[in-house]
Amino acid sequence: MLASCKPKDEKNAHAVISNQTEAIFDNLVKIRRDLHKYPELAGNEKRTAKIITKYLLDLGLEVKTGFAGQGVIGILKGESEGKNIAWRADMDAIPNDFVDDVIYKSKNKGIQHGCGHDVHVAIGLGIAEVLSKLKASIKGKIYFIFQPEEETFVGAKNIVDNRIYSDLDIDEIYALHVTALPLGQIMVKPNELYAYQKRIEIIFNETFSKEDSDILYKKIQSEILRKRDGGNPWEIPKAFDSIVGLTNPNTIFNDYLFLEENRVIEEKKNQLIIRANLYETDKSKLPYILPKIKDVINKSEFKDQFISISFIQENPTVLNDNQLTKSSVNILKTIYGNTAVVNDYGQIPYFNDDFIYFQQNTPGVYFLFGGSNSEKGINAMNHAPNFKVDEECISIGVRSFSSLILERTNKTDTILK
Ligand SMILES: [Zn+2]
Image 1: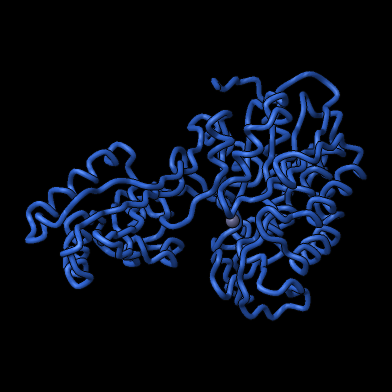
Image 2: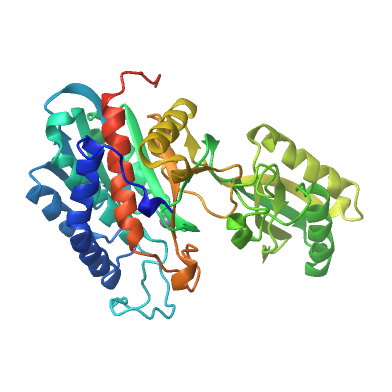
């Protein structure tokens, strides 16, 4: 396991990173537990922002606040000129009320850190502290972006659209998301990390009944479905299965299209409307979806009741820069061993991250990061009722990504924006 891998040369910067990480680990756990105890929903991360701001100021960083809601950016200036690199951590919790049998369980009723953003904040602060001790080795600037409102998919866009952000002139940006991988395991792939999600709306006239919609919806689902043998991509827990999961080149989470089981039916005066989400992994196939569904409807007994079909909502999906992904994997493997990073071959449905709004302007890489530990009975399946994180991952995250950022600040390869 990654936890046991340490840099060979005790004198190098990565050994310093390891030692510094170890020294601050207990405090980072304290901070994470405090955030876990007082979680805040998207748009209301005031207390969280205050804690982050104080921490960054205490490190001696320049700090920008009061933009994009509760956005906070810490600026670490290296001692020589170079690239501008950003690390992003999201801050918000989610509206859950699950059993959480920890002593630091949420005091804010109906709100919980069920996606692990409390861990992201702790790791982000840890990287800021560790790298602030290595100022002399840093070329350029490092920005620590603490982003509110990820769960509502608006926080990143609000930051990117803000003058404070565009003035920073960032060359590269990185982030992680803790999830149900084994403790400390880093997983990444170039290009799309999640499936494309589109919400469709199909409108029929008033003679089309709910019962008709049951029959037709099933027909559409089965006719457009594309998947690999061996399983169904909508069974998310399988994403981390060693046989059909993301680490297998033949994963069922690759090259698929499906229309979700749940749909909303709205009956208006002269219409019956169906709304549902569909998931497609291949961008080039997106334009063929609506014509295909139209064709299914027109060949059915309901063709005369059909009025229209359209996409009514679509979010862009996380898109990792090819060259930067390759470089990051090389850096992490060179320092922490070949097992530190595994390839991801798939795209998970349902989940997504508004980190893509940063990536639309700046080349960036978003990593999936392991917070599970089966020996301790910890399963870091995001948003699930039993979601938990092994806090040891904070130390591995701080160490690994401090090393990555430090190495990238010193790389002279330029990435085309
Ligand atoms: Zn999340």
